[in-house]
Image (cartoon, rainbow, N blue to C red):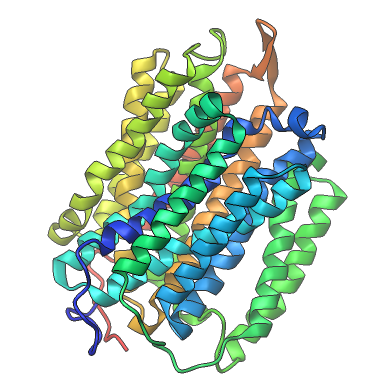
Length: 468
């Protein structure tokens, strides 16, 4: 990364990092908002669980598609402008979700809400362009880790809002946070100009949207149809059939939507693959651990929602605590070392979750997960951006977000299937068995171990390249 901002840019305001971090927080908060509603939605809208599952899936599908496209648009036409547009779409989607009178209206609103996922790549690239030296590394770490903080804090906040003020209040809260973020960005983010003199690849955007949509639909439907069903295998085949020629086209067009050669550089590729593991762990913790805390004695710990919420929040507190120091530690050691330390902390957390039988065990688990996610998310941009031209900062971070999204989608499908396949009735409540939770945690550990192995292949101190 360069040591000076791009010529002609004014000094960035002091509150800019706060404003951009709030965008990342909102992105994760929006995703976890419907988690407490999943059991209520079939009754609220008089529909099936197969349809209500799309309330979660819709935002994830949009996120994986929009994030790389938004990154490229930001590099071409201005990151502040694109970020403001994404926040405006979020606010619109949140208001529509709160006003939903049918499950289809709610799903449509969730598609709109998912657009905010582009906030973190755009925010990181804005910081990368405007900040200098150690302050740049620190602020990038804070903005990047805001995604994990939003997931950790957003889930208990959504639970408390839903129980206290009704299910619509959580979506109204998302709209309110979005409005505050919009005003802060307008106030703090300097106007920018296009950094890349090129055209937008419309054909590439269409191909990516179609291919990813098919694959994400397959992942969403796999637990319902069966992983060997014709529907699942057919959608996977169609998705790959679209993405194969899309890759061929992107490698040959003069102005591609995504620079696949840049994404295939060893350091960038290995870092992105490791992010699949951290994304898998983050979602895995959000799916399994709250259930372990709240379900009746016999399969869980029988805690009430309020103490459960405070325990979950500890993960967010831990991430806030470690993020400012992650960049400094990376400077003294290496980003690779910090990334591996974060993944190992997550492995230790899920290992303890396997044997933990008391609430205080889960307190330690959440603190370790918060530290692990905070460390790994904080240094990921430092590894990627030092090997990328300044003019493609949002694009490469958008690609990174896609890999994180793959991890999140994979965890949703795989862990959801494991938990749904092994159910027991306890005190009239149908819940996953302890065996199902143990299997889920083992799967997360295996994925994290693979991510750690890939991280070990990273060069310890990669040399920065000249930034264009």
